[in-house]
Length: 84
Image (cartoon, rainbow, N blue to C red):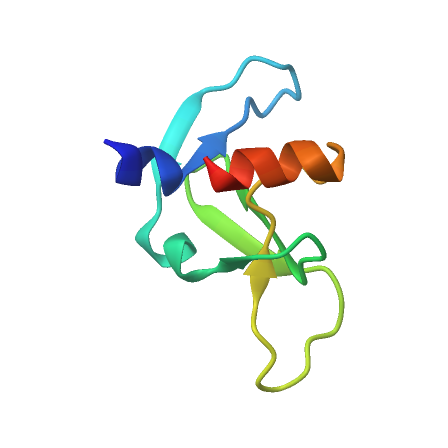
């Protein structure tokens, strides 16, 4: 169960409200590493597909990274959540 939770991605309500639809497990997304300065961002489309977009130009051979947590949270809080 812990592996499932740690590899799940939150599915947000498309209307922008704070009510989430739930979580989805996307096997390909589990291949992305975390960065507090990620070069990619992800979202779940209205069709339920996980989409990943680059946030800036990426050099050949550079790792594609996403944020595993809310980057607006203080560093100490992000570290605590990532270590759980």
